[in-house]
Amino acid sequence: MSEIHEPNEPVARTRRRYRPRVSTSRGYRLTPRFSDEELDAIRDAAEAADMTLTGFCALAALAVARRQFAAAPSGPSRDELADLQRQLFAARVAVNRVGVNLNQAVAELNTTGAAPVWLKQAVARSVRAVEELDVVVSLIHRQLA
Image 1 (cartoon, rainbow, N blue to C red):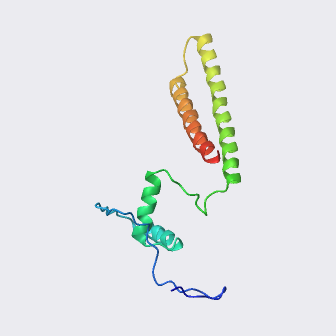
Image 2: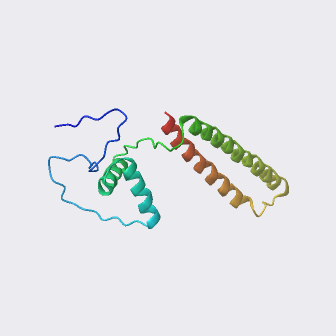
Image 3: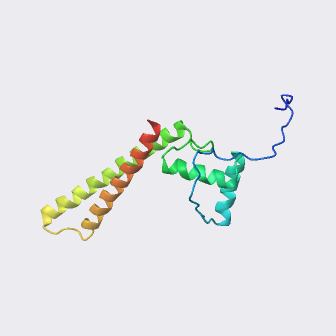
């Protein structure tokens, strides 16, 4: 029998929600370990979701494993992510401009016949930076799509 509550009357919760049960029993148990700070953050999130600590951890682990990410209420908004994406594109352009400088170094190499000592390292750093920026921009693009 359900209780009737007035609209503004606080409802006392006696038990926390558990994750949904499955028809077959779960035969495996994991025992993750957390630092004090990590446990506090997980406990706060579980309480905010009105779940038990273990139920929350189980659902979170399954969501990540199944790639079923829910938007975090305190996470960045779509507009903030779009702004970040624009900034990353601008940073990518700046890194590509480094390539112009490297071209100048190559022109010197062709003129003098001697490569600057830093040329190989600069090329490698530039390539890595552009690749890393491309990965981040792609991740953000997939989140926005």
